[in-house]
Length: 179
Length: 308
Image 1 (spheres, helix red, strand yellow):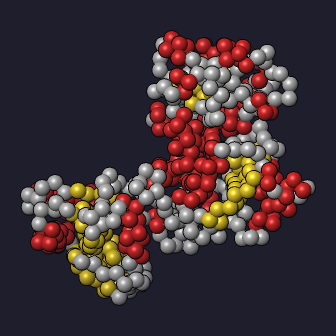
Image 2 (cartoon, rainbow over the protein chains, first blue to last red; image 1 turned 45 degrees about the horizontal axis):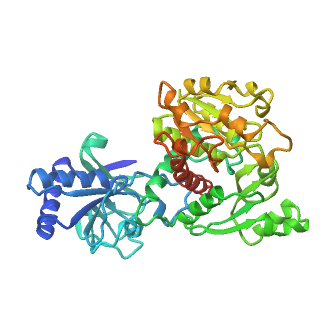
Image 3 (cartoon, each protein chain N blue to C red; image 1 turned 45 degrees about the vertical axis):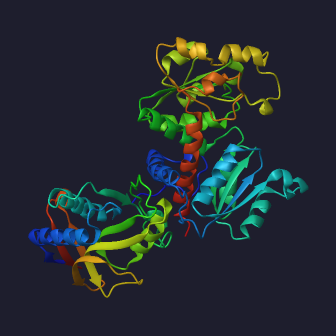
């Protein structure tokens, strides 16, 4: 197993600030916009962006929710391992709001397909966008592309992209792991 | 990731503490789902479930059906009263005929103890026991424990008294197994004629005096007097039963602490508990019904994920 550094902690910080600025450019004061972190690993990125937006760019309080897509996945009973659910925390209605899905890695696009269905349980958003830290090119199973991307990566199938967060893994960083 | 240790839910006796924890964690997620504006998830789109009720039921049947529909399963329901069972068909034949229509899971209530176990040995489908005679009613016990956990934070270390008709009650047996497995202390209380002999061998103690039992407990689970199962008179009159073993507001208020009142329903108002107790702040009877849907969703989801 070998491991290659794709992004260092410093690069992650720079990219997060750029993504935050791109969000402000489009959404200004976030009055009609809601951030939704996709469980489990999109939550760290979403919390980090909220913190940067509020502290560094003085954006007034941002609504953030967590969406778990387990019960909406299309591979129930098709995988060897049972699917483990995480907590959904959306205590607001997304009717007529602009929703931004936030996830760490965009790979096949199937999680986002599930999230597009899952979010409908909370109303009909006026618009849905997708923000990812890592966009794995040439690996999509579905016609889904990000609106905001941190870094595009070419990775072949047996390679894995691992995103580490200070609050969960001890340090920020993105690695390419080959088995 | 964890999965259930069993392929059927036949009784609490057949599962373990890890299974109960997994069911509760999964039910937490489903409880959030059923409080969304749109209360449905598509997980079980390709699963078909038959609800076969050889005994009357309102709450359990509705609760199972709703749970199945909220998971997007296809559901067929069947009551013995309108079926070929009346024409003399055997249980295995009835169920196998239903399974020929490509059914993956069977939820069954039956008057004979062990009917669900028997079925699980003889047909190819995942079986959920929705009550078999005076034996077990596992989903009721799970939702009772889940409601205690929700109200008091934990089941371990709590003192629970089960009051009333223990002899005819499948809810009592499943509850005793489930509560003890989670580390609660259990007492039973009722007229001597309605307490099974040798019940102490299950590790419970018998307290004939209701007031003493209530003073001792954190939770009182008031069972219904099952008149339909009584072939002889087990107590002189309903009035006397209500005086000895019924809980009213005066009794509840005279205790030195606030206890939680549970009832699996349907309530005989004025017999086991009076209306003002059933509708009081201390009663979690309607929470039990809500939790029932979440628990049954969790059980069905976890069993369905094992169907290959």
